[in-house]
Image (tube, rainbow, N blue to C red):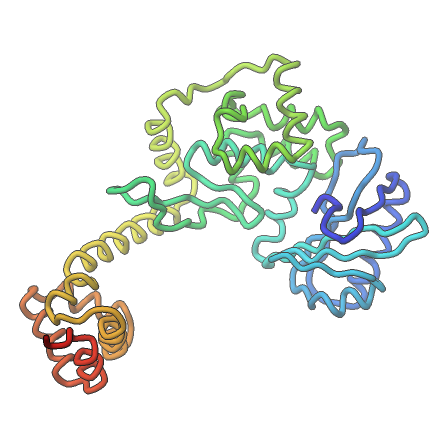
Length: 352
């Protein structure tokens, strides 16, 4: 997105011309292909456009779509297919963002109005969550090593529920979504309206290096920082004790999203089981028990996994048996497997 994915820069179209192109593209696609198609909304006073963003479920593929639109260039980048269509004004970029049906409504609202979703997502990130076009997720970290991410759990696909959880007025947003925020400043006012808002969360010096590099390239984000300074926005909430705040948000999420707590507990239990399993059965231990290393060790680990059929069965065996039984089981594979024995012999040191 942004009109820079193609080999040549996309022309910028004034609003009236852009709306003509948007209508043409949507009419062509909805009349030929099933699924949902929608142009990502912009604020009403936006004067011109460098590309057209289309959200698509059941995307039929870049080839049929490019043929339908007579596109002269196609660039695929993960879930986005960028296409160049030739207009009287020049080459114009159309981006197709592929998304599951279940997340379509959420994704359309997240992507709407320039960088609003990203600005709201910054607050979610500070609380330990992740807001994106696929929904609201919780980032589960290893209790013994918080720097290690175990999983990202889907918390909600309700945009209204996610907004309310993060301290925003979902009714206000719905009115603006239906009518369109008039100015970019109105978008900024909504981003800063959360009861948990703190302008310090957005300062470049307070975000990670990766986010800083990314957001410096986003004109809307940089304009938001200027707006914060000019409007003299003050904090509505203290994020000083970040760990305590994250815990409060987690507890709040359990009440807001009833099915989330069960998924969270299951994820932690699964991670705990895996840690216990790795303490009792790992490559280093198996090497000590068998004397194998390198390819021979890797082959043995593979054969053991295959014999149990699936990883959970192997984990169950290891967790429910004493170490002596696990050692005996491991050595029995070496004794019975001719391939492993040959590799073991080949990996043994040569006599002097």
